[in-house]
Structures are given as C-alpha cells and as structure tokens.
Length: 269
Image 1: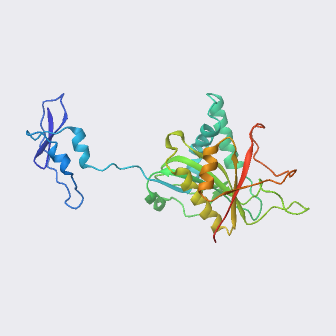
Image 2 (image 1 turned 90 degrees about the horizontal axis):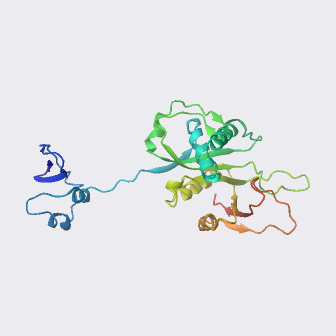
Image 3 (image 1 turned 135 degrees about the vertical axis):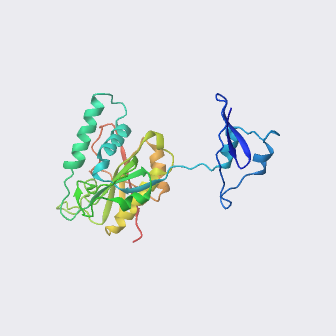
C-alpha cells in the first residue's frame, strides 16, 4: 500500500505497492477549504480514497482566450477550417485540402488598398505568452501577424474579419465597395471544444477589432440549415436582413445547394 501523509492523514493512492512515503505537505491556510462532508466521510483508521482527496483541490480548466493569428498558427488554422467545413474528407484528400487552404491563407489573401483583414484564433494557453514575442515588427502575411511566440498555445477556434466587402451589396451604379462595415467569415470551432462559449469570444473580439477600424456595423452570412449558428448570432445582437426581391446580392461561394441568410449588427463606437 502506497501512502502519502497529508497533514497527518494518510491517503490511499494505489494498492499495488507496499510502500509508504513520508512527504511533508502543507496546505496554504488562505486557500484550503474542506467541507465537513469531506472529513466526516473519512474512515476511523484515517485512510481515505483518492476520490476523496480530489474534493480538497478545485478543478482547474484550461484558459481559452482570443488573439490575432500568427504565422506559426497557420497549419492549425487550416486544420480547424477543413475539419469543420469538410469533415467528410479522408486521407489523402483531407491533407491536400489543408495544404491548399494553407497556401490560400498565406499567399492568396490579397487585400485592396485601404482595406483591413485579420484572422482571429481562440487558443488554450496563457495570455502571458503575448509578452514573449520574438519580434516587435508589425509584419503581416495575408491575414496573419508575422511575429512568433515561444509558447503559442493550441488553436481551438478561428474567425476572419475584414473590411474588403466582397460579400456586401455594392454601392451606386459604379458598384463601389461599401465602407464602414466589417464582415465576418470562416467561423469554426474544433469538435471537442464546441458549446463552451468559444464562438462568442471570437465574435466579441471581431466586434472590438471592427470598432478599432472605425466601422459602424458588422455583417455575416449564415447557412440557413444551421439553426444553432443563427440562434448564436441573434443572441449576440445580429438581426436578419431581408434581401430585396430580385436583388443579386453576393454570397459565399460554396455548394450550390447551400442557402444563406444575411445578418447585420450595428456597433456602438
């Protein structure tokens, strides 16, 4: 029996070894809070099970925060995008698709003069990593920050926000780009991290980015066959905009069978 003394109480960790270790352990008085139930459940011998020891320690969930994507995140961004939007693909097609997305993100995202584009990522890690960037230069490659970090974190969700207005109705007879409206696209969260509020964090960060660009509104398209996503956006303050009958408003280029709804939200600047 392997026992570890905890403040005078020996706790059973396993029953495969007849070994007792004397390890001094002190709980910080300010942070230790044990319920009466925890102590009342201890046997008279003073032995407790590992499951009872777990009650003494709070569960620590990994921190998920949103930041601007960097070049080092490119592969995970491509992987998140493809696994979310094309889950039916298998090797080798899925690998080829990821390479295609990677090249498109790095070299195919031409931005017209006066427009902005940023890729945001939700990562598991610590915000302290932002102080460990290897470069202070404002280098941009596509929609990515060119700086590197020694501890980049794990990408769990992605979102792209821009002012290019490719999918917004053009203005006037000359079909000029609309200004002052940011556009959200490519919102995706890895399967194991869904329904944890990550998409909301990405949207809030995108709205903050749009405000910093001086935008008065933010818009997006949502697949009408995905009521969960539509409910999410409406809950974040977006409103469904009815497309005028006969109007030929631009839409994302996907499968011809996919129907999109157009949503917009006014921003408080």
